[in-house]
Length: 184
Image 1 (cartoon, one colour):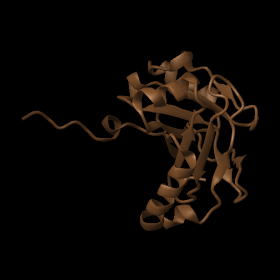
Image 2: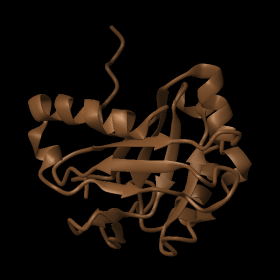
Image 3: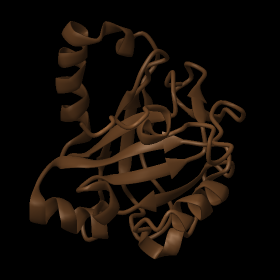
Image 4: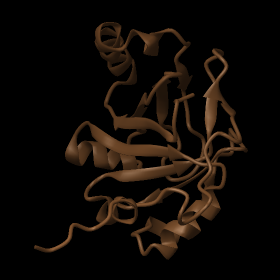
């Protein structure tokens, strides 16, 4: 489980096993703690337009995790891979209340693909997710998802109570906490 609500960075790859092999070498040198837990790996996502994708995540209990998706051919994500090549697909933030967070993001006037619709994973019924679009994030797709953890068994498990946004004022913006500089 990541140490904060910034859960993972996800990359779309052509060959999941090769990505795991290469990133194992990278992490062995740069972040060995990411290799201490068993890799979480699913050989087939069974729902929606991108059914058939494979994915895996290096678990990092002290920081942000690295995730990979190998899409199935002929799916929207597979078509995107063919068009733009391997790339960072999204950044993921975890929250206990995905629908509530999406309503708050909508109230902020942000670009939410599908109007902020929340999806549910049929293989992990506790897992909910939605998206903040690239028009509001300056290029990055952001996944908003239920918090999860590894129990070193190669699967994800629900981890409620980890991260919750309570509303305006809980995390004041820089402009709210730094007084303006007086004009001379």
